[in-house]
Amino acid sequence: MTDFLGYKGKRVVVSGCFSGMGEATARLLIEMGAEVHGLDFKPSALPLASFSQIDLRDPASIEAGVKALAKNTDSGRIDALFNCAGLAGGGAFPALDTFKVNFIGTRHLTECLLPLMGEGSAIASIASTGGLGWSRRIPVHIELLQTKGFDGALAWAEAHMEHVAEGYAFSKEAVIVWTQFMGAQLIKRGIRINCSLPSPTQTPMMATFHATSGKEVVDAAAEPLGRYTTPEEQAGGIILLNSALAGVINGVVLPVDGGFMGGLATGQVDISKMMGGAKAG
Ligand SMILES: NC(=O)c1ccc[n+]([C@@H]2O[C@H](COP(=O)([O-])OP(=O)(O)OC[C@H]3O[C@@H](n4cnc5c(N)ncnc54)[C@H](O)[C@@H]3O)[C@@H](O)[C@H]2O)c1
Image (cartoon, rainbow, N blue to C red; front, side, top):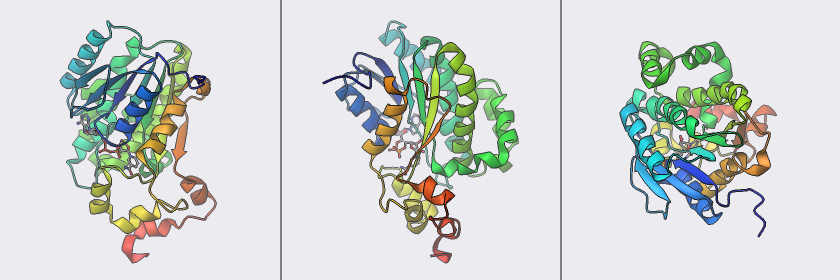
C-alpha cells in the first residue's frame, strides 16, 4: 500500500499513550509502520519502540523522561510529536495539576524535545472545544506565553488563579493560543505545529466529565453528530495534521467534532443547553 501519510519508518513520540486518544494514536501509528516512542504517567501495554515514564506535573520528571527517550534513540531526529496526555478539571483534580499537565508540562515537554526536531517535523496537540473562550482574552494568554520554562509559567499561574479557575478550560485555551503563536515562529525552522478540538469522546476521561459537568451538558456538546466520537476518530485528526500530506498546514486549530463548531457558528447548536445544563434542558 502506498504510504501517503508518510509515517513508514518515521520516529514519532506520543504523550498519553496509556489510554484513550493517546493509546489509539500510538496503536494506529505502529500499524502505519512508524517507530513509536511512548510517554505517560502509567506504563503502556503497546509494542512501542520505547516507553519512558513522565509526570507532566513535574519538570524534573519531564526532563528525565526526555533524557531516557534520547538515550533510546541515540539522540536521533524526532519526526513528529503527539501531545495527547491530559487531565480533566471541573474540581475533580487540583486546578494547578490540571493546568500543569494540559499546558505547562505539555509546553515544557515540547520545548525539551524541539532540539531533536528539524525541518519537516511536526507537532500536534489535543486541545478541546472546552477552550473556545480563548479569543476573549488573547492578551492574557500572550502574557502567559512570555513566561520562561515550567517554573516561570507556574509562578504566573499561581499569581493569576482568577484566570486559571478550575484549570481545564483555561489550559485548553492556552494550548490553542500557544499553537497559533508558535506556528508563526517554528515554521521559520521548517517545523509545523497544530492542535485539535475534539468533541465529547468515549475515553476513560468521560466519566469525570459526566461527574463534573453533568451528562446533559456533555451530550449537548456532541451535537449535531448525536454521539460521542471514538478515540480512533480523534487519533485520525492529529495523525492527519502531523502527516506528510499536511505539508503547509500550520498554526491551525482543527475541530474534530462532527460539525459542532460549524453548527455553533450558524446557530444550529443550542449553546444554552451547554451553559445552563439541566436548567436549560
Ligand atoms: N474525552 C473527551 O471527551 C475529550 C474531549 C476534548 C478533549 N479531550 C482531551 O483529549 C486528551 C486525551 O484525553 P482522553 O480523553 O484520551 O483521556 P484519558 O484519560 O484516556 O487519557 C489521558 C492520558 O494522559 C495521561 N496522563 C494524565 N496525567 C498525566 C501526567 N501527570 N503525566 C503524564 N501523563 C498523564 C493518562 O495516564 C492517560 O494516558 C486530553 O488532553 C483531554 O483533555 C478529551
